[in-house]
Length: 159
Image 1 (cartoon, rainbow, N blue to C red):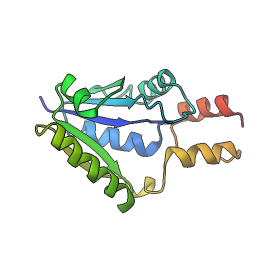
Image 2: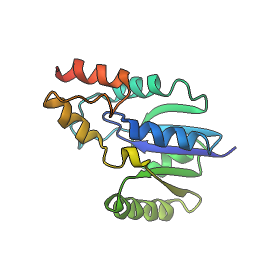
Image 3: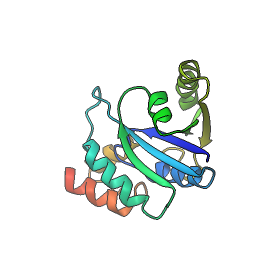
């Protein structure tokens, strides 16, 4: 069975994230969406809220499981029997950082391969930070996130 991990903070999950998740799910038998517990960030949503939102928007994808994790990504992947890490790339600027992380992960665990999937053109500009900023100013985010996520953001920050 080919198992992959898609790691991220997903604060909040965007249509770009969901696109990468769907496309990855079509390529692998099992996909774990791993929400990194990152204590250095100040998230809008708690890890539990992010997990709930991700579970809602991926409920129609049978081979996807949403979990949270902390520690090294390669350790999490190993614990799930995953030999593949999938990262979405929006631009060249994403590649430089992700390439460095892929080489680090390969050094830590030579059995793990990192795959990069380029974002669909429709989402190449989209980030969680942009979503939060637009929502914070009262702008429409309906093109950026699934409806369930939009409702949660509006409930959290107003609008």
